[in-house]
Image 1 (cartoon, rainbow, N blue to C red):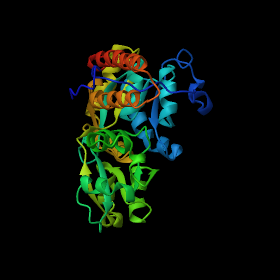
Image 2 (cartoon, rainbow, N blue to C red):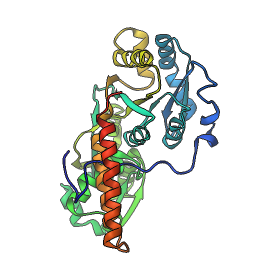
Image 3 (cartoon, rainbow, N blue to C red):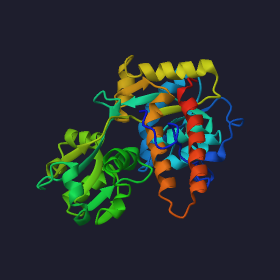
Length: 336
């Protein structure tokens, strides 16, 4: 995407995480020098961490066999994974696109693969839905009545739940702040937002095609209670990142293992089924380009929406974002 915004160059970046969460969660307890040849693999989750670790055990065991290294899995919130990764306390991680961008910007990590769903998809889309019985047929219909409607949207760090709809759905229709347009705005997950529509707690909800796929697979009655009025451009599935300080031969083994995983033995298929994935495909930092473009726009928008700033202060802010964007553009094109 080559859209210019004022005098900005193309990329913008997330700010680094604030307070360190790794120490509190125990992620920072093992320093790289102390753990020898053990690989620490971070897995992001907002749900049952123990179950996630149990589900990923077969995969980690096979990765250990392929690399000749002990592999230790760590399940935590994305902010904790990012903080630990940047501190050098993790070697590999599965992250969402936004936190992966932060890891790449730090100079510590790089994207080497991305997940593929059980349906064989390596991308997905954000959607906006309304009650199935609603008269609304398009997003423009919704926005025409926004002042009377309740919106359920994702957390501000969510790509499909917040960033993509904010940019492609709202900002492109001159709605820079949905909370100032809709009667009420609440925050929830992709499933929670659809459930809010079904239970009449919201009139409009942001979700994604992955969640809808889950509902179809489970033949959920929830599918009958909403309809989609807007679908975004495609978003790349979440990536795997590695510490660029890992030896080159080890990185080759890891990437080859992931790229062919599920194609060599029934044991691998069992491991994939446990984590509800179809496999992995080779990827690079470039998959984060659309995410960086959206972040650029939001940074630019934030600066220009600050009325208390003088023109000179705004100019300096825009220049700072442009400089960071240029640095990130180089990182996204580098292959490590």
